[in-house]
Length: 196
Image (cartoon, rainbow, N blue to C red; front, side):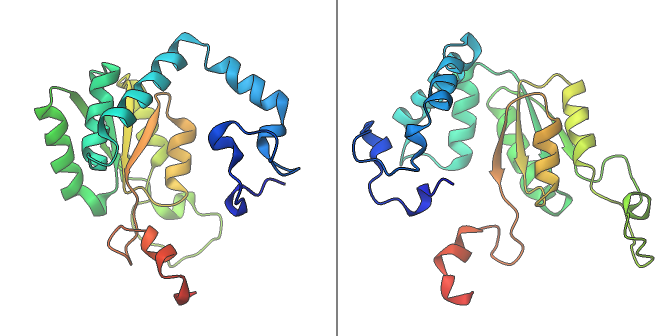
């Protein structure tokens, strides 16, 4: 089992193999070599180069919104997909407008697309279910159909986001993570661990 979250050495930061603990991922040579080979693929080289440029130019200067827009520019993307939650429609509308102002063609898909009744999807048999279910698989399929080059999620629910990532064909990043209790700032719960 890997325990990087508890490591105090962090030898990987400097490529220091000597002091690494016995269960350090740096010692898993087959994965290290296989992942290194993946970075030699042309499309991956271009992608990782874009992330390196982004970090160099904007680290500690740009907001997540600015970083996302700049990354799309660095990568030369033209067609962007935005998968968003109905509860964050206002924010999604603002973000889509910003992307368009920066010259991107944007296809946005709401979570309730398809209008699927929750009772049709539930296996629990809960008769109390009401309303339309979120459809993250549909969001991904619709953006795949649009042939987006890069997708951005805005507030998809836990689980729904995982299904979206599973079915989306284009690389995807998260602009905003939903947290209804902490004003969409989930790290607040980690900074307030006394509550748990």
